[in-house]
Length: 413
View 1 (cartoon, rainbow, N blue to C red):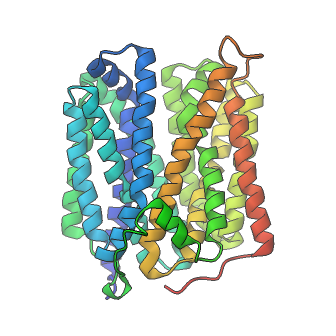
View 2 (tube, rainbow, N blue to C red):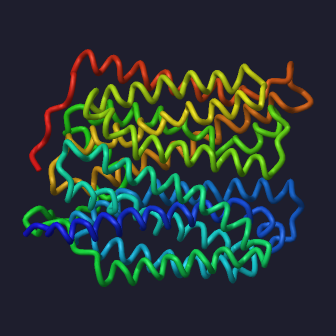
């Protein structure tokens, strides 16, 4: 069974919109969650900041644990039921967060958001189902663009609707997820042919099992290590940017929001206009190398040049980092077969979650230390120096593997 041209078009639209809504749901929390935590927990700002860190950890941990599970369920039952179930769960979760009367409810809500937000794995696997290997980097770029757009729209909606109450943005996110669920129920076709499905194995539907399974695929573990290095580096924006911009440039909240919008727009432009051409000319591996070395250089620029106009220029130039994630994801996707795409994307989702946990643990303390009263000298760029080190480590690892193995052999699909 194959998906028709019209079905592929509907599937692509649904997948991109699903990732967009997931990103909006993630971003919509950013401007309102601190005050919501303070309100329902009766906490001071300092205590709410600490509590918000635990909420973020719970979310990332569930993404880490559930990514392989969602991917393996998709390999067994198809992408459609897993994605629709995830959207239904997100709708309920956002309502739960909106009605939360205390901190315990917020933790349950973030836990459920991490579980159902693992829809990223079957969504990208569905995209791999309907895309030839040579076009996957460009299509995965659409996913990156959708996430970038959602990260622009989410905080904007959250800040605007938050003026009417801290719970209102969650109701809006619930409505968006419900609308996408209806669209998917009527127009999203199953993308995984029955002959490409495989039995479900609980031993493989977890991060450890996914890692052990990945060992049998040539080159995947080295690419996974590179992707993890990159994930930690790229967390410097969501983890520290708002604090860094105040310490380095003295920007207001409005200016910080505008800078994030500029970053999102710039990265979407790269993913839509540059990624496909770069992969066609240089291949996925070298395209990722370009993005990593440009990002690392820009991170050093942020750290060493405390000029606001220079920071804005770096935002635009560093958008080339948007070449890295989809290119490495495409390389890893090439190395597996059609019946294991869900498992592979679930494994990648877990790697992303590990970066989301490790990044703030490394970057935020460095920023706090070097901007605090006990610092040996004032240096807000400390987190960006660390991020640059990880970005260059990813670059050199890619360069080393490029010399040893130019481009991986395409697996059967």
